[in-house]
Length: 329
Image (cartoon, rainbow, N blue to C red; front, side):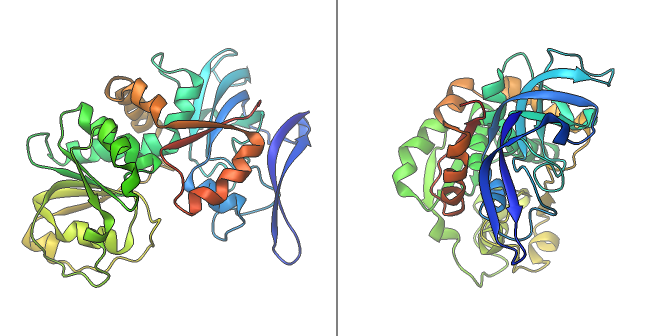
């Protein structure tokens, strides 16, 4: 038996979340069995646990798009019992049972070995949010945005993606400007490495002009909608905007003008289905480019039942940094 957050849906499509005792025989027939040590609560997990439509594709479901733990059995030559592994994405917690459980069975190709720099708690704290942030930084680098080219805007700065992106960019020598709707978090963001804090209202025009005064050499955006549209409009010529989220909305009111008149690149970052080589690169880079002390400072740990409580808070923008779930607590 093992414990898990278990989602069910009734005939009226009402979703219930409870801590349930399940049998290991209930797990899907994949090739690697894992004793899960830590999972996380991401925005997508909040949507799933709170029963919002568009995330979970079938019920019953164990949510949790991240997990970190130890391999206990493997039919794959890539992993052996005792290996420390991390899982991010691959529709786990949406179409496949996820990480908010004490046991899991997953496809070997979905897993990444945890770099020796990190323990399982830190790997979970990085999770999808940190891994996505690293993919965004890689995207800026690959589009030629260097540390000396000007400020990098990070939106949704106090969230998981934003917090990690600030820490990584600052360590790499970039000037980072953090956009937030929570001015009380300014000292936290400065401590992570942001050199300037701006109110998200500066990006709040809901009918933005497609070309505005340029401010940013690059952008890491986890918000979407008019925040993203304003950020694009303010990006320097030949700058790059790495877009990875839609917490504000999936709409985008802009035109081709920033792209054809300024050569701005809008690069989408899909962390869910990246191939293994790209995932491994991101995790290897984080082992050198992410300050573990800052990671610890941005992390809160809760038990399995606490994961249910936190779900609503993350949807309401009340969570700072990362929430790690100790599934055995």
